Length: 285
Picture 1 (cartoon, rainbow, N blue to C red):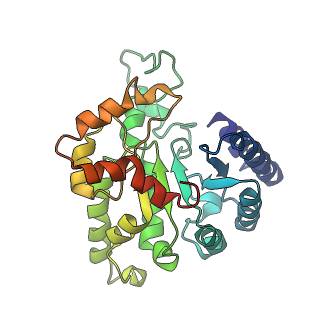
Picture 2 (tube, rainbow, N blue to C red):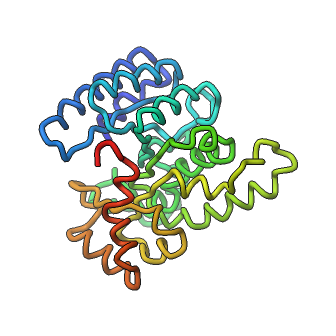
């Protein structure tokens, strides 16, 4: 992620540098992944200029990118559902290439790269060393709000009809956990129903949660009750992820996931470990 951040921080300063850096990153990761067919290059597409974003998708596909990470922020003061981005979603849909949301781009003013403002850490109590022994990794407060930026990004896309307009568009939500998905699905449907009289765009052909089930996938943390998550949200929504080579997955992520899926049938496990991935990335699975 650090290589993305060095480029992404130029978004308020120099768009030429931002998109030139994105092109360079996509070229580098495409070349890196060519040596092993098991690796899928994840390109980087900032949304600060919709026209340039479309160009970088076209170029990234030529460079071998099998998916693209899009920062979960309202870039240039626009929702990701804004018509200016229709060309982006159309390109990804036609190429059968999914977009990805990932931890790291949901910062708020004054919080740096962290999802929760550092002001909440000014509590007059004992300090922290950080989960990995330093002070730069996520802490307990970050963990509680890690998904918030992605939730806001996807809420706009669902309720504003982007997934209805682009029914073959697919997206993955990576390293942001999945426990939050269950209440989010319920709240989406409630919001669609309650505000349909005052927001005419909410009169969509499907329930809001049905678009999520049709077009999105999520990776749970190995510390979460994955069996319960699958039972509540359905077996088609969730993917295995260890975050290798990072330490977040623990020494034995397979065992941790297995231990958390007591009572889950083999068909659901197969979807979790393999089938859902192949549905998300059909051209590269």
